[in-house]
Amino acid sequence: MMQIEMWSDIICPICGMTQQRLRNAVADFEHGDEVEIIHRSFQVHPGIPPEGITQTQLSLNAGMTIAQMNNVLRPVEIAADEEGFGGYHAIDRTLGPTDLTHELLAYATDQGKHHEAWTGMFNAHFGYNRQLWTMEQLIEFAGEIGLDQDETREVLISRTYKTQVEEEQYRAQRMGAHGTPFIVIDQKYGIGGGVDRATLTRALRQAWNESHPTPALIMPFGEGDRCGPGGACAA
Image (cartoon, rainbow, N blue to C red; front, side, top):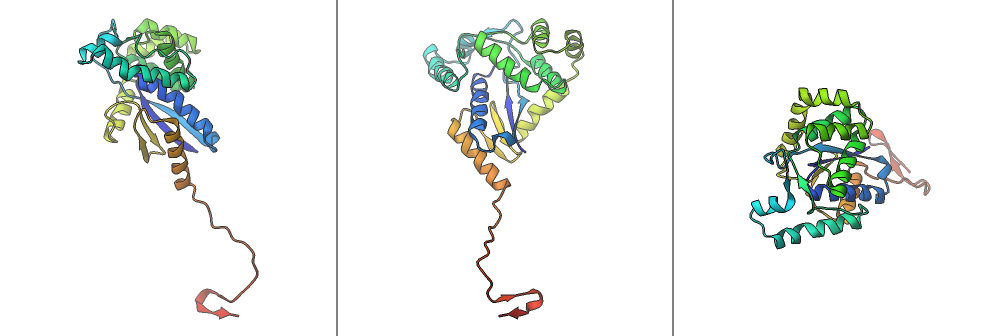
């Protein structure tokens, strides 16, 4: 089984597009049924106030003009929709701090809801501009994917998964990640964010071929002279 790890933040616009593209690349891959995608946590904007901030204001605060923001993010929206997302909103949305968000994702993973949680959050945030970082927002979402809401509240209040989430980010940073998305195949091959589907598919094939070398093909074309163990040869 090939394992693909993808470090993301749920509010990272390139991450939401890339997770859709990665799933498509795996579907294109001839050994896709032997590939497992695992999402990992990486918080990119820990300093955002709890009340949130619009993408436009965040870009302006970073020194970008509106035109520059559009030049960066509109192509991301188009790429996501071309991958089949449908109505991807990278600009018209509000962002917030996602420390509790990642703790919910870790809890959901332990409850067998890994892909429902990650995919559901990407769809909700980029498809419907849902805000998923306050306690009440996260508890509501937890109920939607079948988690017990009272238990979810206890987990988030106790910060049960805080250390685990932080360690996931530290691990990516030790491997050289400076942002998201950050993709690693079989703990050996790193891919930066925003690459096209063809590049992802080529990377999958290369990693697969290196870990599954083709055995030599022996064909019975008759018998000739041969040498055996110890140097004995026969005609």
